[in-house]
Image (cartoon, helix red, strand yellow):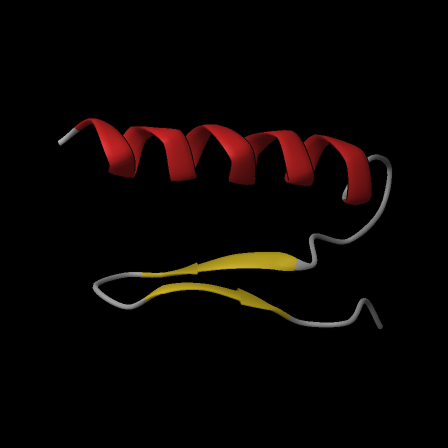
Length: 40
């Protein structure tokens, strides 16, 4: 429903803030959610 869209929206905001110009730290795990991995 609507709540999953809210989570996706905020994850996209976070991605724009912390992944800007560098290797992505937030990864989507299909069927599980999200994982935060430090950039190398």
